[in-house]
Image (cartoon, rainbow, N blue to C red):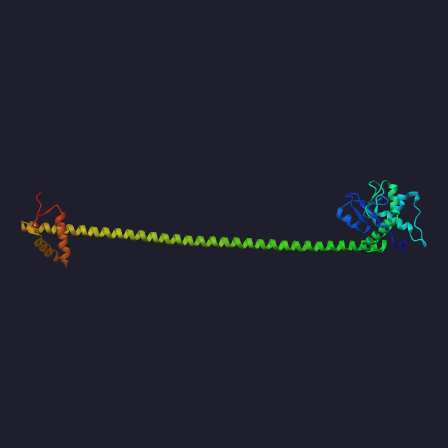
Amino acid sequence: VWSVSTFVSMVYFCCDSCQETVKKPKVIRHFQVCGTATMSCVDCGVSFDHDSISQHKSCISEAEKYQGKLYQGPKVGGGGDKGDVADIAFRYVNLSSPPWKCELCRVNVTGRENLVSHCQAKKHVNRSKRKYEEEMKQSGGGGVEESEKKEEEEREEEKSGKRKSEDDQKNENEKEEKQQKKQKKEKKEKKEKKEKDEAKESKTKTKGDTAESVKKEKSKKTDSGDKGEKKAKKEKKEKSSSKLEGVVKTILKKTKKALKLKKLQKQVKEEMEKEGKVNEEDLKKEVKQVVKSSSLFSLSDNKEVSLSKH
């Protein structure tokens, strides 16, 4: 049995900003999402703001709106709620402007009057009933009271979602703050490590430079020592040669004649031994070298040494 309480007409609103059509239970959410200031009732065309829209719980039916003076209102009794059924039947067609068609039955007609007649046909009414029942089940059923309850639930859900969103944002901020601290710490550690490595490298370089400097200084001293030693040896050798030259000259003057090289070497040895012990072999070589290199003496082919004639 179809009664008036079963088919309480659910009010639809059109957003004055985005033109979206919204069911009554979803209008508060749409206000929050879209940000519109007003929404208009699809049936009566009256605009409502956020505060006043909750009071508009029911409106004129499609049948009352489009049948005008012909509308007789709902009939209660054994015949069933024909007026309310008519309201449901006109719910799923557009009688305001062409094209004149019924999407529910997939029918196209010519003229508004023919579309009204189609909506009053039994086949269309039955389909409208089934469609309306499906909508009621999907929205939770129970008419206006149930719609208000659902609307309240949606508001609570919205608040819960908002709280959840705030908690998520807080967690996200904390996570981002931790990440920034971690990056800052890593950057600081990296900088300290770099400075430490640079200091170590500088110390190693300084140590290497010092070692190189010491090595160079040591090499310089060694070179200087070697040069001094060579110079001393050279001076000693020159002094020795000069002394031998004098001894040889003295011996040749005394003899007043040329002497064999071996005999001269022997007499030089005897003279040098008066001053101390000498190495015979080294002395022979030095005497021979002095005789050959000095311009005071001449050495003949038969190895006789004499004073040079100037």
